[in-house]
Length: 162
Picture 1 (tube, helix red, strand yellow):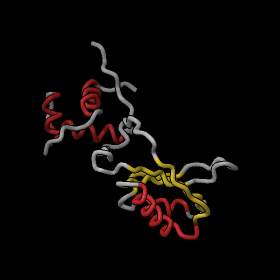
Picture 2 (cartoon, rainbow, N blue to C red):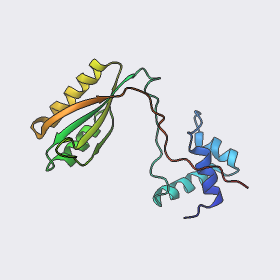
Picture 3 (cartoon, one colour):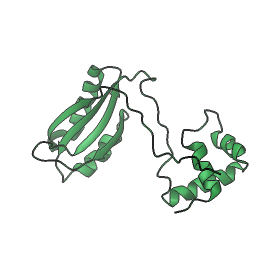
Picture 4 (cartoon, rainbow, N blue to C red):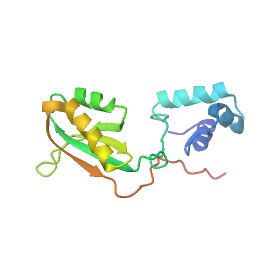
């Protein structure tokens, strides 16, 4: 797929984040020489076409004081995993939740939910809340704590040479 030059410019201008102002799209549009309405229409079309999956905030949890991060993993009955995954993912302290295939016999877990806290005790307390929600559908669980910060970015377009 070949991107229209304006669409490519929009993606290059926004891929590292939006300006922290009250009207970020207006600022980006102005720098690209187009109206805010045109920029929003183009972003919407790119999203509809699947070129852009989502536009969302990516907070730095460490700067927010949430320095303990635990990926909670759960062995959940396949018959109820979709419904439970939606409920777990809706919890205010779960930043992402998804289903993954098991790798038996060593890895029985099929539901993953990332939890952040100020310390490990807070993450353990939140894991207890998830366990209560999952109830008897859970056969086993664990927490994998982060040991270092990894650079988290999505795909980036390289600057096009003129």
